[in-house]
Image (cartoon, rainbow, N blue to C red; front, side, top):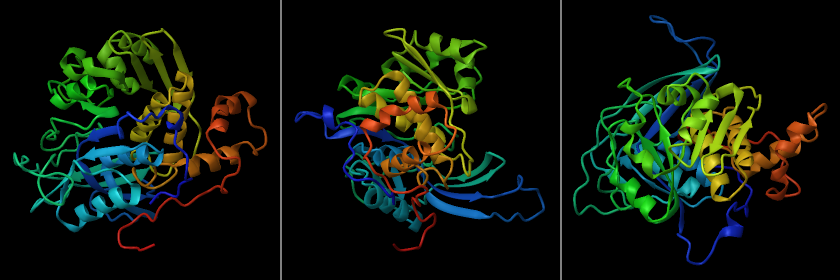
Length: 390
């Protein structure tokens, strides 16, 4: 469970009585992630490796859902859950622990939860996943209960990390929401995306590696419904046939209102296609423990800033900050920072010697969001395993 600072709502000044109850809707597969950290090198065939750290948490689309919820957004998730202990743990961790709305989710009888084992070493990670496609939902299946079916065992959800047996089964009628996050894939169109956009949601498009090798933007039909498109540098350059991430961002801004290209250790670059405004923010240097889910946390931070109507550069800086904080902890969903972590970091960083004034000024917008006093850094965010009671 997140250790959070109560009362911080980034959208408080914008909320009105007739606004949708849901801030962000997303859908996709939920995995049980088992994460090993502290490995000196990649596992070698025929040998046994011992890790200095280990954690377990909901993964897959749960990474992004948790990151959004911890930033104070009312988050609704549609997903399939196995009726095994892993599925029960993931459901309870998300609904009870994080306050995520699972009214559109289902438990599938007799279907075991997809599992990913992630091994982190030398700033990289190796993943091994297992899962089977879930049965198609029955026409009269209820929602928000431990019965029914939705989604699949595929990892090709909103995380854009890897693919499994098949694409998820998405709901046709998503709840009315301020925003929705869609995982785009070549040759696949999900009707719910068009429905969400037609109902007023800002659609943020994530994307994974194009296994077809064609890298054709026209093969992403749901891109036409997106407010923002957030590929990494390699993906952006391949899709635009450019050799520079910034040139790729400008080319993408001709197709979507907001193009955001993540640059890894170099930060991020974004272009507002409506105004021509561009923004670049460098990455924050941190000692990384586990990079699992950092991209999902970045998207959650950018969605939060966009819904709060912050300037483009502030959105990028905030997204980069949340991602940087996440890699210092275990796992994807476990590592997602809440406002308590952000406040503690901001309080700490201003007291460190020899800080670059320009770098501090980049995050000055946090002063209007955070409490005057914060708990001391570091904070322990969660117990990273199954079985302990708090």
